[in-house]
Amino acid sequence: MDQECNVKHITKCLGVAQATVSQQLAVLRAAGVVSHERKGNQVCYRVTRPWLRRLVGLVAEAQQED
Image (spheres, rainbow, N blue to C red):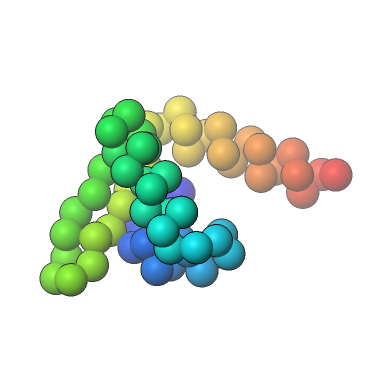
């Protein structure tokens, strides 16, 4: 959440198809939740909303408690 990632890395972490990740990132980008930056032949994404970083952290914390 605190660093940028490319689609390949996100796909690997989530274990879903690259097309699915790309489609969802397009939705998140249109909503202003993530930003993107082209680096050579890769596109890197970053979460732009600080409140979303906190929310995901709280959800992850809650899952670890269960």
